[in-house]
Length: 252
Ligand code: ADP
Ligand code: MG
Image 1 (cartoon, rainbow, N blue to C red):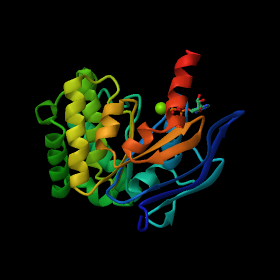
Image 2 (cartoon, rainbow, N blue to C red):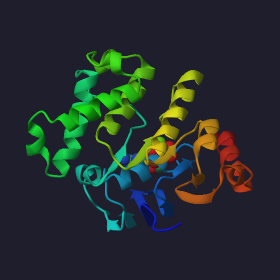
Image 3 (spheres, protein in one colour):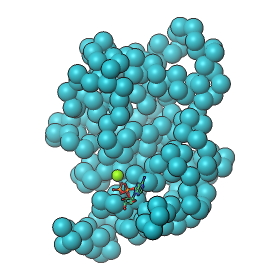
Image 4 (tube, protein in one colour):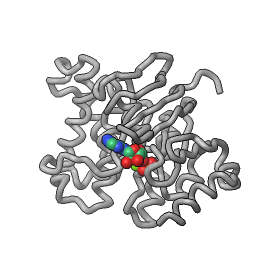
């Protein structure tokens, strides 16, 4: 890998006595789709929260485009070009679809100190919103309240919201959760299209077929540690990975 877009060194996070992330090293190349999998509670969402500054790490370093972003606040991370979706959908339910995109865009602009410029109606900004609505199949829903959308549409809006801010790196936390087969198929096409447009994607998923068919590489977490990393085929063949998943099934 040439200079990675995102470099994570010995990242750790303790919550009281719980070691949620335990010294994880990870590299993400520009324009790559990296799958991040692992049983429930293995630290995937915590990784996303650490990268996006929801809370500071207990130890380790996060480097984005050769800049140390460890300990940066969420709006600074977004301004730098890292966008994320939430495992549990977090929309402004009382705002329209269009307004949700407008607000998300403003958040990135504000973090870059561009908010004053964008207070006026900026043509570039409107064009980006239109393109995003179109890309996510939400053009005919623009004036509907987010809270009134069907579940699959809310998932699409969760993605659209972050795309409106045009980040270079996307961290998608279980975007297929609760989707039907057709919706997962559309999501697959959308993720591949984003890569085609030069985006870099970290895809956290339990939907194995989706991960294994879109990811260039897959990393596996178990109890906060990275236990395996490789091509989808290599990871599927790995005994430690099978054990991690079967182990969880036994505990239930
Ligand atoms: P995953 O996304 O892989 O299911 P998480 O990152 O959500 O796993 O959780 C990893 C571990 O950290 C779990 O044991 C979880 O209970 C704990 N954890 C996550 N977030 C918090 C938090 N904000 N406070 C305390 N414990 C947390
Ligand atoms: Mg999670």
